Length: 103
Image (tube, rainbow, N blue to C red; front, side):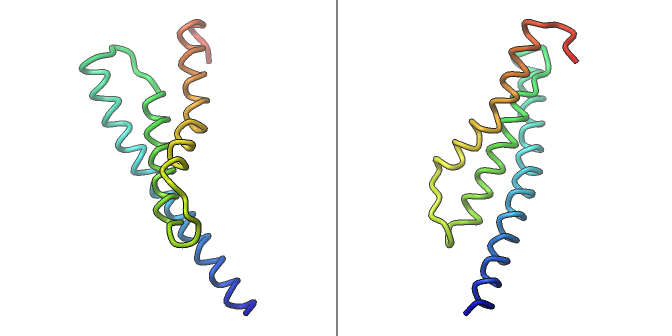
């Protein structure tokens, strides 16, 4: 029994990690494309906020998909990931707006 539990735990960890890393890269690519389109069409300044939100959604979505058999996560998990990972980017954008030249 212990061997089975360890194997299942290892399998879940591997799926979770792979989904998080893959979600990071897919979200980053989608966010870069979205940011480029936004900068060209609407907003003349580059913003990392869209990149942060895209990466966060990719990670959250990947984790929801990877854990659907082991842990019943809902879309609220993905939204929570977007909020949690998006807050530092939002703070960065706000500081940049009010404090030009911020490193």
